[in-house]
Length: 406
Image (tube, rainbow, N blue to C red; front, side):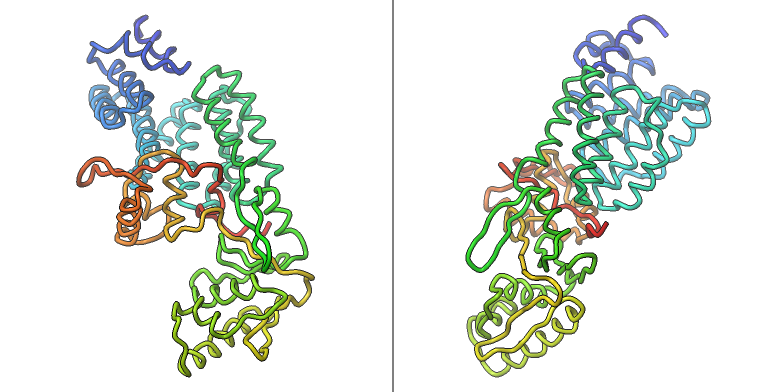
């Protein structure tokens, strides 16, 4: 390997893509194409980066399997950063196996990092955690150790384990300082802000206040019956009742929880659950049916009693009831939460990450664009959507994750 290639690789490793480009910008041999592709990715030109990396993989030839595998890993990272979640995961896994078979453990670990980050984005937290346990970070260079600790923190944040997340972020900050890469340090600082900004709102009949993640964790660990508007569940201790697929029942539970210890009039419950301001006998009959279903669903943790005006919710073992609401109440808050990372997303990637249909996501994006909350650029399959970060709020509780029952 000649001196220019070595110098360009060193520049990329230290976060200096422009320095790398000055050394290999005019070269078209395979190593130079690969380094140019990585440099273009670091400066944000993802389309050009992918083209260069594919040219490099072809130029290396079939005998240079390790170099080709490294190009595949680099292209996978570009796809992940540009939120192309439909990029074939099996291709990345095959490249990782090749790198491990030839003893390139650092790049193989990086491929594993990319697999875990993709799982985090699409909400497969259990799979991500299992894969993370197979990695030993001790031999990693500082940059890879930073990425490892950020993934540990990401899993902990989604599971509402704030102490674990704080410790992992501290280790990530230390590793980033050793790596001396400004972009890594900035990424750790951005991730750390999640612990200090409001993550949810606590609503009662007469008050409302903002909560940080550690406050949410403490609330869920307390003896309080929590109507969780972030996950659409009703929880008490380790018992959780999911109403995510039963929006009418959750609307009733939330209305009753916000009014506790008072009751809620029947007309108000009909308006909240059915969206109707007009009340007749059919609405009242339907309300009785839905309240009966909610009473059965919550039977282990709460009682619903009829009053002269309507209905009231009361905890069975807990002393109080609290309603946990999203930090930003928007019809399309889940889509905004993904876009709040500042990256550009395609509608297909948003659909995959959120578990919704692509058509539903497209309708949400069109509505958000009309209100000026998101912007689109590109056409057809290259169309991408971006939005500014939600100022002053963490979106952790809006992202896909399992219920925090641990």
